[in-house]
Image (tube, each protein chain N blue to C red):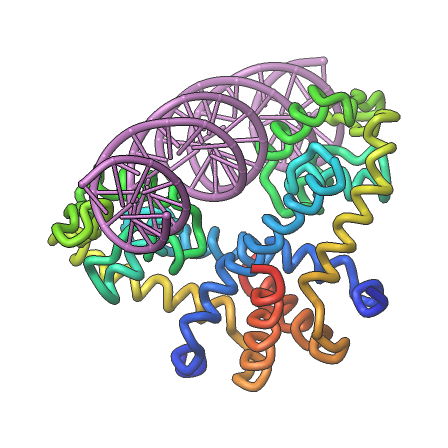
Length: 146
Length: 146
DNA sequence: TAATTTAGGTTGCTTATGCAATTAAAGAAG
DNA sequence: CTTCTTTAATTGCATAAGCAACCTAAATTA
């Protein structure tokens, strides 16, 4: 309690979204500059599929820290855009396994490039030591309230 | 570039929203526990008005790092809930000055209490030194890309 | 094996966000 | 003054999120 009072207002507003909003907007902008017609939220889904296909919607929900309805709708849109397909799991018919289409796979290179650019822009001028410290703290905060 | 590659995936997903999403959800939950029927986004507007009334929508946009249409709609909803009122500025008739209603002022105590609880939950177990470091880094990141 | 509980997804409803285009007022330039 | 530009706010359109309720399939257990 006492500690928190000593912190500036800024800290709370950073924690509650200024930084992440700024990053999302920048990523969105960079995706557009790279001619990628996807939202930053769609990017987070594609990112995980670029690492590993055949994830269930529940797995994507856990990985992206979203709820199930959000994933349903993101997948709906990505499916409409012909970037992913749902394949019903024969082993567990409740699950959908999500796969990339050829279209979806083609976006990987540019998508990863633009996110790397975004991260570089965000972290410019910060040294590794600091970043590790920040990550450690965000990690603790996340575990406190997730 | 090299620095960022050394960081774990987690860092990027923290930066892009896991932490702030978790905090918003927790704040939302705590507001509900405190019988406050407002969203966490509405809270951020009220928070600034609790500090100072008569802000313009543009000022609220800057303070909360949102665009003007977002503010227009947040104020619409808060006005419908009879928590704030728009007063047309006589000096500059383009602007609306936003004031709290009695209702809106009454929420201050519980609203501030629940946000303090949320912050304490989030920052539990972290020492002041660490928090200052984290704030410093988030500040730099924000200025890099805002 | 029937009954109950749990888990994966979807749908409905409400709120919020981003971007582009628009209106109206204020300020600046001629 | 009158035109041009900037600024504050609004509207339209599309996407996304949270929560609760629901459906169906799987797992548990009685």
